[in-house]
Length: 77
Image (cartoon, rainbow, N blue to C red; front, side, top):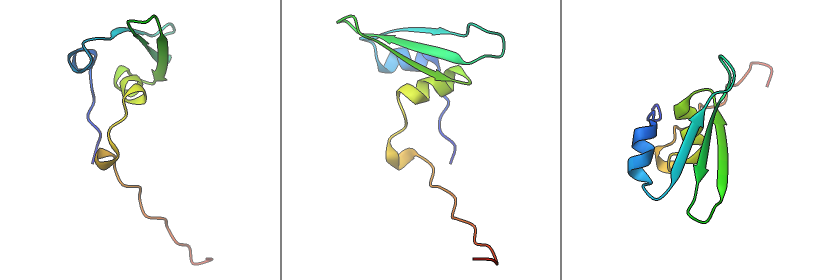
């Protein structure tokens, strides 16, 4: 099961009391999501895409996260 790919619009709808900045300072570089709270706190998260940075800040609940693949056994085990 693939995680949903949230957008900045999704994030703003879900968290209307927070302010956000999304930027990439280098071509093909990482994307940074900064979250600003009413009390002046700033939290930064990064990812390869905007959605990855959002998921780093707001991961899916455990029941929605994909199950890990079973470990492969070797004939040498």
